Image 1 (tube, rainbow, N blue to C red):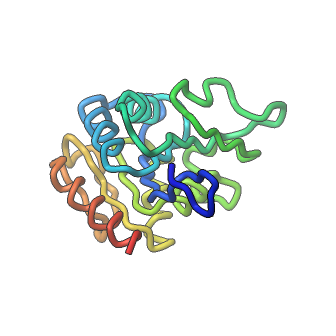
Image 2: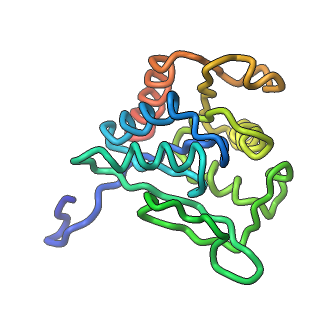
Length: 185
């Protein structure tokens, strides 16, 4: 927090979007990423659900002290403000949408994937399925910087060739730092 004109305000921080599987946690990738992002003084944005989203959010929120907050852009259902299982317990700012969980149709205009991508300063994609692949493609469409972080290059075989993919955490750190610093200049 800082004081501006005598009132307390939350500092404006870059937003790092972490996209990935809603089912598989990929702890070896997501946990160190979440802890590191918390120490970097950024906000974390995910889809607010399970799998990678829960793992990276928990690791991020377990860091004390930290400046950033954990944001979740949640799918909605026809009957309620959020679907079952959303938000995960570590989401500090839930953004409730009316947009359904789209899966392989994640590039449709009525997909929250657009919000995830457009709200992020920089994105890190971990292993995932069709929804994550659509977020990668949307990042390219909208000119958002994105890096794909995997344990094995075989986890994504259909990536557009212009997407940066790595198995090295140091590459992710350098990529995110470069784009976070550029956004604050």
